[in-house]
Image: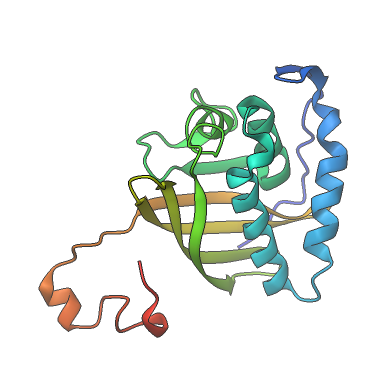
Length: 204
C-alpha cells in the first residue's frame, strides 16, 4: 500500500465554542502536547496504543463536561487525519470531516462525556498490527459504562487504522466501530467464538 506524501494543511478559521470565538490554530499547542506523549514511547506498538488511549481519554474526560463543542474540536484536531473516515458505534451514517453530519458532530452531539455524563472506559483490549511503515491497525474491544445508576454498559468492537503523521506522530485515518453481540448463537460458542475461550477469558 502506497501512502501519499502530500500533506493536506487545515485551513485556519475562527470557530465559536463555549469559551468564545477562537482560531483553529489555538489547538496547535494541544496537538504538540499529545504528540510528545505519543512519541515518548520507545516503539511503534506502544505509540499506537498511546494514541488510542488519548482518543478514549478525550472522549471520556470530565474536564470538558460543559464544553461539548470545544471537546469535539480537540478530538478532531488531535486524533484524526484530515481525510479520516468514521463509521460510529451506534450511527448509520459514514462520516468524514467534510460530510454532513461530519466526524466532529458525532462527538459534539452524542458520543462523549459532555452528553453522556457517566461515560467511562471500564475495560479494554488492544491488538495492534503493523501493515506498512506508515500504517497500523489496532483491533480493540472497549467496554464503556454509559449509565452508572442503571449499570448500563456497551462493549464496542473498534477497528482503528492509524496513519503515521509527519508532524504529530499517529492519527486515526479510519475508525469502524460496532456493538459487540452478547447473545451469540450456540454453534459459535461451542466452536470457541466467545470470550470465555479466547483472549484469556476477557469479559464483556
